[in-house]
Length: 262
Ligand SMILES: NC(=O)c1ccc[n+]([C@@H]2O[C@H](COP(=O)([O-])OP(=O)(O)OC[C@H]3O[C@@H](n4cnc5c(N)ncnc54)[C@H](OP(=O)(O)O)[C@@H]3O)[C@@H](O)[C@H]2O)c1
Image 1 (tube, protein in one colour):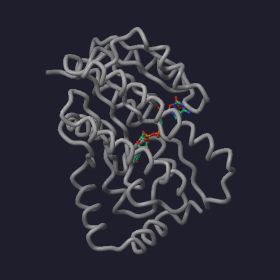
Image 2 (cartoon, helix red, strand yellow):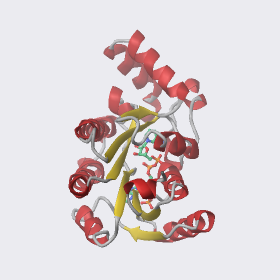
Image 3 (cartoon, rainbow, N blue to C red):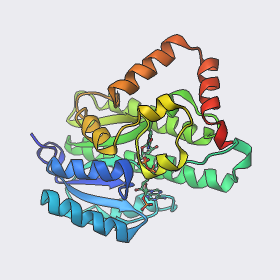
Image 4 (tube, protein in one colour):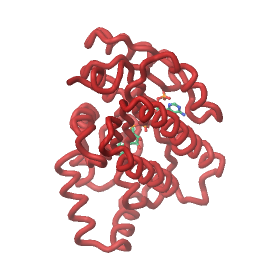
């Protein structure tokens, strides 16, 4: 059964313009869904919409929206209320690099609105819709930093931890229903954002995956797993880290990796 038959006609990808969101949008269209692309850059989204439509034949809509706006969630709910929504994919996640106290607090508030406020409002709303009709899916993109913490990117890791814990808890609550919730955790993935901030150590860089592979492997786990770390190498490295190091050692290691961002 393809995703459209299983969950509904339309998927919305929040943060679709590039990177993992773009790859997810292609992959969801290949699995039969019509797609709503959300991001701030309307022109880039229109180009992407045409590319996906030409490759897959699916209907693609563009919904330009800054997810940090106070009423972003309400606007998205309003714009999609007459569609048969089947799947929500929350991808965008703002970050900031540098020592915690040196970043302007207004930046953290902007991150909070994208990573927590808009995210949790959409999760709350669409779970209600999906549970009511016993059909639908929600996929959140997580990061290993949400499981470990991340010096010099501490607020991002903390907000990621919130998104991840909430998604995992809710995923369990939806077990044994026809609503599937997945925390899809990415390791290093070669996206424009990652290329700007990539870590200094060679092992992490060598393990980096392409967004297309992350999307395919991750979305294969929807309806199978509640929480899934994408990439064999990422799973081995993470297992090794948490089984051989205590928390202090992990924080020290990650701190050294990102000292260049201080
Ligand atoms: N790349 C990695 O190595 C990696 C590793 C672990 C986890 N992740 C997670 O994977 C997800 C995607 O990461 P990524 O590297 O592909 O890119 P990203 O930098 O998180 O996201 C970029 C996407 O989000 C959109 N976006 C950013 N701010 C927005 C806003 N205020 N309103 C609406 N859309 C906004 C951008 O489009 P516009 O510019 O058009 O708005 C773009 O499509 C994130 O959740 C990230 O935490 C990534």
